[in-house]
Amino acid sequence: MALSSDSRRLVILDTNILIYSASKPFNLESEMRQIGFTQIVVPSFVLDELQCIGRGADKRGRFARLAIRIAQGFIRLDAHVEGSDVDEKILRLAKEKRCAVATADSALRRRLISDGIRVLLLKDRRIIDATE
Image 1 (tube, rainbow, N blue to C red):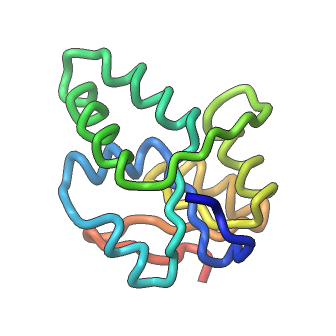
Image 2 (image 1 turned 135 degrees about the vertical axis):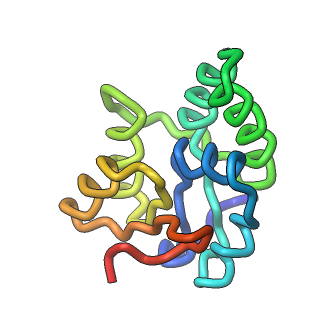
């Protein structure tokens, strides 16, 4: 599926929100669509990070493996973005695409907001706009 040019409908999912959705099940896609996001994207580097975490035998590893299955229901974006870590790559990709990011990571949330990027976060298994 190709991305449309309407960046207001595009949201990037980060690793933490996918793991959270695996650990505390709720309908992530339905929540996103309810607030107007029709293009839900998982960058390839987020999937790579989930695969690394998923190699672990602990609870987080199990949730990462489930998160990979959840991510398969969304648009995979083969993004080649410079950055020293996944958070920086998400930040740069969101700037490039001029789109929102959904995250459960408070440090990433602060970085995104300080750079003027729209942030969606989880609160009581609901997606809310952290920048409003």
